[in-house]
Image (cartoon, rainbow over all chains, first blue to last red; front, side, top):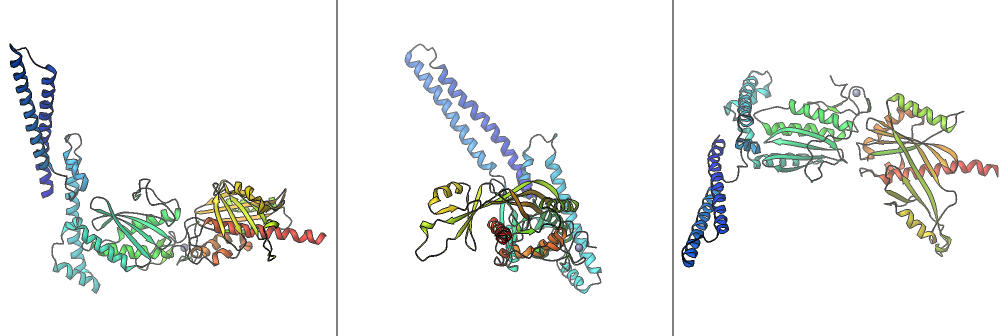
Length: 311
Length: 212
Ligand SMILES: [Zn+2]
């Protein structure tokens, strides 16, 4: 919230800076006016020159003063904070037409709401874990108790921590290579290459996976300007199907208190696609059904099934 | 491109080449495959010119210059069991200049033409192989686009081939064997076509020799 407040302070500085720019412009135009008018009629030539020079000097001084003022203000305004919890969308607060586009306030509402939701979900999951019959789950409940009030701040983990988690996962699976980049500020994007089978683009927000797209090993994953292409889908039906399943997996692997475990589980599940073209369906025993290999991987056993052969 | 398997489909008993092709394409259409334009693969044979042969009395090697409509800007030059060169289509002009070293074998041009079919991620090309004016056989090419390693998807390809070739399903192409987990490339397809064309040429020579 401190960040949001500081944006408010900046707004004041912005308003001042804008009026300083206006002042500078008018003083500059006064200089040119003075030059345009030239020497006004005075009794003596000397008097004319003197008055003109004095006038010109005054005008230049005021230009100098206004410029200094603007420079001072521009330091106050500063660079928009990169670490703003809403990233670049925080800049929406600078939009002056609040009444027509109340996007920023809506965004703040949504952000607060999702934070609250996550917090409550965390509490609920802690409670539910204590009630569980499974011993392993019980232990998890205890550990959740030990650190009460799981922080809802998992959305703003330091980038270094995210880097560490990802590089640990990268080392865990030799046939899987993960390349991390941050083309848009603090959010990480992963390019996961699984053997010579497929490539996955993973869009992260902190340690949460927002979006994932699966493409073929021989397909282009970059746009024309060399950035990761997070919008276009694969040309092959099999990878479109796997993309759908991966999105389902994102919804399945949820553990609000331990986002790193979620990422690891997701990657473990994803790794089972190394045999995408080699594993027959565990139910019907065939490779193909409607021209597609078994694209589904069971979330627990990682066994291969056709989309229509899973329970 | 993905992994491709090229094979020959024997002409059905009591049927012409054309009729067998029609039978096959009808089967594909029943399966749900959709027509998607046509294709053509051609091949010309070149002898090493006699004047350039070494004094060791080695036999002239045959070189095959091929084109594939799937790669309209490329030209492929292959030796049997030897390297395969992928070049720009300008290579044809170069061959004319190299007349002193490589001579085109007379009436050696062999080609296959037919229809492309798309079925899910599979691309199927059924073609009529012709040498000069006469049809000599049927080629069946199946490409599985998503996969790049031949050994990874051979079982899957085999299942697909069986679904419309039945008892005429081919064995794994020889080029698959020596690739291990290397990425499959267009040149591998051309090698398969070269082998298919050579096989069909030999099949034709037998009855001709019998008549003499
Ligand atoms: Zn199945």
